[in-house]
Amino acid sequence: MKICGIYEIVNKVTGRRYVGSSKDILGTRWPQHQRELKNRSHHNSHLINAWHLYGRDAFEIKIVEEVEEGRLHEVEQKYLDQCALNPGGYYNLNYASDGGRPSAESIEKIRMKLKGRVFSEEHRRKIGQAMVGREYSQATREKIGNFSKSRRHSEEVRGRISNTLTGQTRSEETKKRQSLSGKGKHNNSAQNNPKFDSTLRSFCRKDTGEQFSGTRFDFILRFELSAGMVSQMVRGKREFVKGWKVAA
Image (cartoon, rainbow, N blue to C red):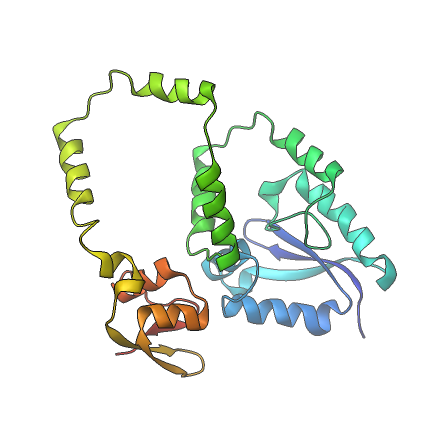
């Protein structure tokens, strides 16, 4: 029997939850969540990381409320507004039922909740762990890049930075470390930029056995992968990128 309504995916270890809605929660949506989380193709990177950290058995799905299909998004938004008041307790990446920008009311609730909030060391550590392995789409990376290029600090912020650095003396050990980290950055284009790497390599997908041979840049473009993560994989710093690995 189809169940249409609001559901939660609950981490039984931490109590953290993911709120969603579906026309068929148990028949199609829950199996889809499990499949995508297992294959790391799920849209929610926080939930992916938690799924692989705690294991499948640490999660369960709960029916929160059965809702008529025509009111699904309306009711879901009420639950997401509650999530916005406690973002640390939920895996949701946004609080809009249509997947877009939250309402002005929701944004104000989030702003008031977070105003003046100071995160503990433990909280910051958990946030850092949740971000490990997170992959951004090409569109998202372009948005971040454009924002960074146009970003300008206010006079007040620049003044604070200047005051912080005034009189600061680097130790010999710090100078040596910075010198070593900068060596080769401009002379090792093939390593840092896949466009200049003409080495032919073979890659294979662990779940399907699919093979690909070509340059690192061709591989990145063909499968829309993160250039940084593929570079780490080629250098042996990570084993897989979205199921792909360097063929032996």
